[in-house]
Length: 163
Image (cartoon, rainbow, N blue to C red; front, side, top):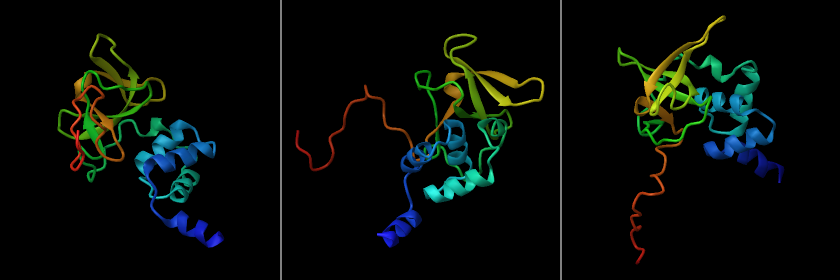
């Protein structure tokens, strides 16, 4: 039994399994999100070690950081549409005028007008740097590949399944 548990700890786990395990251990959403984004752990133990080593980390530290060059559009993040659901405080991706990609934090939705989100692009000691951008220019993190199609999309039957 003990050996099986040790073997399981070294097997790769899904992001959802790691996320649930960390939250079950009492880590806050903010800490878990930063760990999953920055560490890209393969196991809960790897994530716990990163969180221990980076105990003071929070999502605020990620705002303004460059997106890792090995991240790919469609796999690690997707460009959102005006209808893409976001949560206040969610880590997002923005493309800068020079073409580089940086992380930001969603501060408000549909503000200052519908279809425009305000993103924190850097934190300062006295004030934060914010930018209002069209919703469809904001990247949504996927962490495990592109999100499923919207619920109202037409269903395509799987091969081998008769309708």
